Image 1 (tube, rainbow, N blue to C red):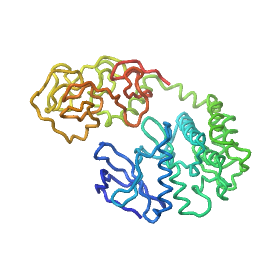
Image 2 (cartoon, rainbow, N blue to C red):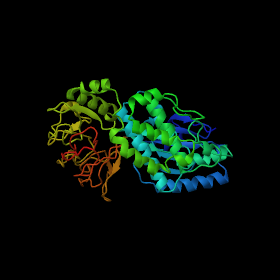
Image 3 (cartoon, rainbow, N blue to C red):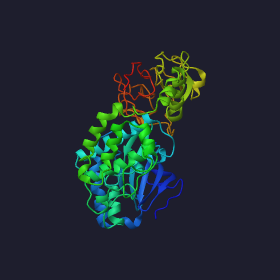
Image 4 (cartoon, rainbow, N blue to C red):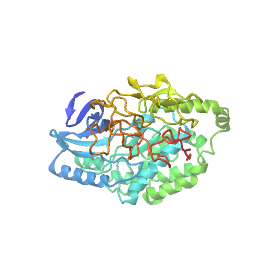
Length: 435
């Protein structure tokens, strides 16, 4: 089996730690020293890399490279690095399997169900059978976003490891176990994942109805959603949804009433939560996920919401920002906007302020640099996230900044925003339209 040490270099990647190991591959968290981001590296065990499987891997990588869906995890890169075959993915927080080990609200489960169905439906519309749907192949990213991984990669592995059939024991459809998979097999696997998520228990062969945990399902879910689950778990594949597209369409029809079966005592508990408490919980969740990523160091002078130095407006109350000392990250300060500056920057990258040290020689190597100036004649080139202007040549940054792991963008400036948390865009001040 492949084994790499912590801090070992693999091309441009530096190994941070091992995330998981299975019969097919080992997965590592690694740091891309060129892009300055963390990624997931999957290294199939050397014994699996034959001429035939290598060609199959290449075909699957080319296939997933054309995917464009927010709930599908595409492959960033694949190939040999230092004699290791490496598949590179964006790095998520955890798998759905990990998340299922902790309590989830019904609202969260409905959101996850919708995202999973949309991902599989997208594949089915492209006539692609996943064949290895399981909680461990759904990766959770910041903002509650789920993305489906291992398209085709799992099939190549299982064709190598098991001559007949494919899939993961526990989530495989009966006909798939017999070596006759179809799109309806993915429907059955999705039914098992959803039932486990809602009930806390995974149905087992011979899959008789009602499965274990049905009492909990009956109390919490609307009868229409229960009927939806039952149809997904039919032993006779012809009685199931024909594919995930029809399954997702059916789910959308019943989604508005999916939780009407929730006991009244839960509704009373929910109604007792005040708006102030809700805002506190929202702020705590935001800080948990984004404090480090956005370098949140201060609070708004008006609403006391958490803010970072690069924000031009408070995202919670839309107040124009005034920088306080506790937010400063660097040694010197801009005399105009009071934001802190590095000593080798020639201009303020936040307000287009005058030169701080016009004779400074650009220095590099700061891990916080995450972008490049578009000016070919610029001496410095490196940009930190959410800079308005290049601190070396003063050119306005045209490429919209994204928030890593989030897909929402401001309708005004196009920069990344967190629609689930913020009331307005912190970069241009425009109000954010809620979902």
